[in-house]
Image 1 (tube, one colour):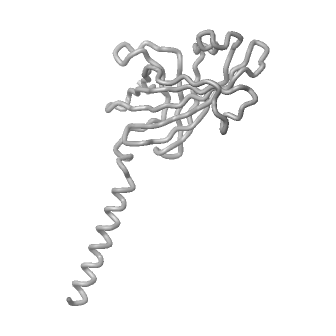
Image 2 (image 1 turned 60 degrees about the vertical axis):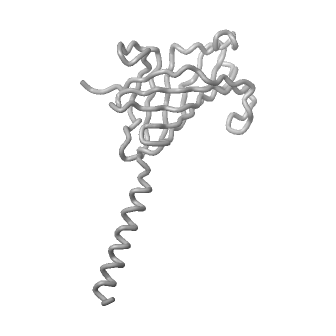
Image 3 (image 1 turned 90 degrees about the horizontal axis):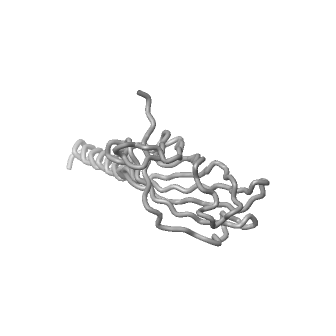
Length: 175
């Protein structure tokens, strides 16, 4: 094999290797919708009646970032489970892309009574699937509850509520 053919063969193999590794590292993420932006909770995608929550999702990349959920209509008594609960902080947390249009998230809130005594902390975690039009999202959620003296980063929750019905979000855009 002459020197020219050897260089051509090595160059082709290197170029092919770089192209394959680049495609493998993309893992479908470049073809998915962005989760970043502001989303409002809606009852369904047809009439878009608001449910009372709004989340702002941000990040320095399309792979992960932070989120802040405001839910002023949320029942912090959790249906009477915590009858003295009065108010909660903004839910703050993180998200990560798990596929083209799929994401996982987790955030936490601190709930207080009318005298601002810390009653419990609640971690919400789940998955998000963004619709093909990039304007809708279907969300699952589970709740983990922690006593005020618990470490919500390491301790087991004293109560968990799992498998809630999916809920829906609609992306806010300029006209």
